[in-house]
Length: 159
Image (cartoon, rainbow, N blue to C red; front, side, top):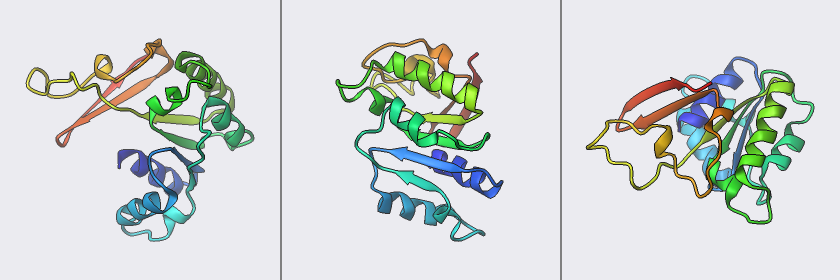
């Protein structure tokens, strides 16, 4: 929901908003957006929703090529980029996306799963070490992180 809220806010401010997902159908995503639109119904119709089975760094870069600076894209979710073994390793994809985003002035936000080992009894919010990864990569590719749990939120600068 936070990723969709981020995109709705981007569209409200006149930016292009793109949601890349392999988890939800376009219909499911639009239903969620409609429930969040509030005072500006129909705004979610401006947002692009991409549900292609081939989503990867190359796909995202091709899709956003020529997008205006300040475009906001949310990738639902980080681990999806590493799901298909015929795609480059996650670290390579993230390096390519980081370079593209910096050059093109695109804002990329990645939703991520938290590892099952996270224990809210030991700490109230997850952190970078709790991100569920099948393959490790340099977390320095991210500039910021936001962690949520049971209504609590923490923002963290990375780089």
